[in-house]
Amino acid sequence: MSAARPRVDIAQRRARVLRRHHLVRGTRLSADDSSGPEAVVRLAGDIVALHATCPPTVFLAAWARIDGITPADVEHALYADRSLVRHLCMRRTAFVLDRDTLADAVHAVGPRVAASERTNMLRDLRRSPDFDDPEAWIDTAATAVRDHLADGSDATSAELRERLPQLDGRVSVGGDKSWGGSIPMGPRVLNMMSAAGQIVRGVNTGGWHVSRPRWSAMEHWLGGPIPDGTVADGHAALVRRWLRAFGPGTETDIVWWLGSTKAAVREALATVGAVEVDVETGPGEWAVGYLLPDDLEPVEPVDRDGFLLPELDPTTMGWKQRDWYLAPHGEHLFDRNGNGGQTVWWDGHIVGGWYREVDGGVGLHLLETIPRRAAAGLRRRAEEMAAWLGPVKATPGYPAPFMKTVSR
Image (cartoon, rainbow, N blue to C red; front, side):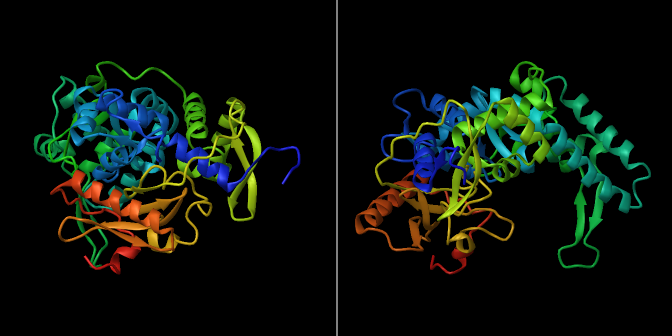
């Protein structure tokens, strides 16, 4: 540690997150103060983006932070107002972003993610005897999709493959292994085009807890083109947003969250004038972190409170170095690939997980002893979640390891 640098300990980090992520009493948003869709848009902007790999996460992340919110409010913002957009961006992960953040993400990480998608497709296409010119096949398929959607029409992935023979290629993977088989390449072309900002997952034809999107041209969906920008400008904008919502964090945290490079992150930190601070990354463990220059003053602590978050929630997945809010429970709540499951929090840190019971209730799986009043409050919150979900029983896409041991 340096005596010249400001110090941000674990207590202060937790207070910042609880306030800025609208997670506890006195900080949560309200659908009564503004329209429900507007509240969801504000929330997405305040915490940069909502994780959308698993469709229920977007809705449950909003429920956890906005009093009075309904699934219809979230759907209205996504599909009627189109003020929120689902997009493949950081770490090849689907997020829901407001329009300004969407533009930043397309410019910052779009080229990198689209190039990665293309490279992965080429690897598989070149292994197949059915594709004489993999590069040309990808280009031809992408052009066919663009042309088909150019008039403002939309289509599911299956419909596009039926209508466009250029898109209907398959490759074999896995050889004789049990998980091997033939997979379509069309959806991967769509993912590449999505990352590049050319097409977008538009109207969802399933319930809010499933993903059955109809693809549209991005420009048509938005009613105009994405504003021009550069990779460097996009990085600076995203790093500024991340520091405001998640800071302080280390270079390791930011590089991981963006899915970018150290060089790009260092340039962005310099551009936004980020200030070095000493940040506590775990009990008694310190590292160099960063804050925005106008955000160095401590924030007021919040009252102790508890809440439930869905799998892959943006708060749970906000940092790579998580000991300050997760330890020692990582092995129970994160899978081997680093995907965080459904979590229970108390006093700014994770204390367990939650799960749906056979009767539709929400059960708690606490991993440490917490005050009796805290446990009672969490049980009440679980009952409120069960009532909000009603008959919807969304199956976790990334179930936490503890779920193998609970009785449901």
